[in-house]
Image 1 (cartoon, each protein chain N blue to C red):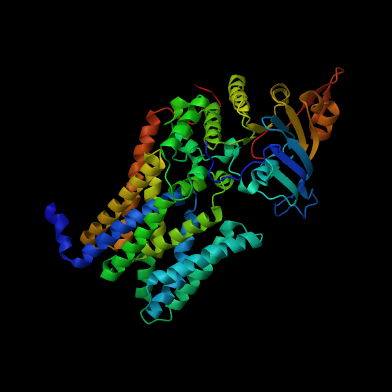
Image 2 (image 1 turned 90 degrees about the horizontal axis):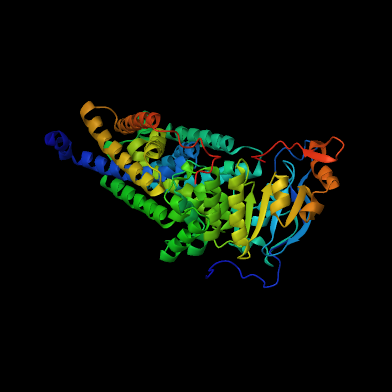
Length: 286
Length: 275
């Protein structure tokens, strides 16, 4: 068993992949809790795709990918806000327009390059085994920044997510907090980009948090459980990828999906045994 | 208790004063489909400190809009809104208790967590709740008779317990003006009475309450004044005068029927949630 676990660790690129998977598991799964609770899954998926042109430009110019992604993340958030406020479009329609347009632009720019299909596959599905030491350092720093901000603005994000009207009557800076959350999602997407790729980032943001929601009744414990599931899926995914020789990004996502289905099944069994609790809303029991 | 961020109240200003407030419909279709252009028209009234006012009117009368304007989450297109002598913007002493269907009851928070949210304005950005904040939260829960619910997940609360939790949050917020949007819908009479009993207790501290309801009996029996609202203020008076048949007819129009010869009036109001 120990050999089974230790054998891949003799390769430094596997060690880096594991570390990257751990960081992504923690950061993506914790921020994902807010995405699940606020119903922002579609927006999260859109953000993952709209940053592609920024990432591609940075890639072609040899800049850090994070810079291009952050600029596009900010532009996406502003663009969706503007389209929703200034036109009669609903938010999901506005997201859809920007999502598709920018993703197409990113793919188009990438297609001007010689090794288009390999680059595209890396952006779409991740290139975990190609994580360089510098990539790993950037990932760690960005991940730390996201976690720090989630910690510092914990009670504000909680109020904003549970009761936006209360946030306004308490005169919290709601506009700033909403944009900050969008920025954090953009940074998290950058962090996760190399591990799972644009097409599967949503899985890291949503699946561990959704699994944790079945098991917990308070936000801090939901975050801890979500992070644990994220880390487990990341690490297990790397081993699955190594031994079964399948692409690492999809391996991570498949492990997370299996965990989700397992927890869903257990929750269903538990609920059938206990009495449903939210049916007696109109009766005072005290 | 010390209030860190709210603006000071003028000592002799009324709790609430609106002067010729107009609010346009913000819905995208409203201007083109020939309906009324204003959700609220020419709203002028004042409420003294410690008063308890029932806001009554048919669906679409603008009750929720009125509350949003008072809370400062929606700006009036015209007119002046003063809370304790100042516009709503700087106050953190206004508590809005949401309608049942505006709350995500599956959200992973306990009653204690929800009540602590009321303290967030006082605690201030980047700071954590201190011992004094937890003490305030637990005192608030005791005052509304919900101490045993402290660690209950909110999805497991009954309707009455939900109202107690949100009233405790208003107390933890040190609210001096509480806006309750149809809090008594679907509650049985003993539970309604228990909630009113908590409001009696708050009144002794000078807390002002505006409560939207469809229950004319309750409004008549347990409130100082009744505001009959149908985009305009139809009547704002002591219960007996406010609920005069002429006023009801003007406020409810087609939903009103005279029953028999006695002059009794039946209001058929397609109640309730999601105005």
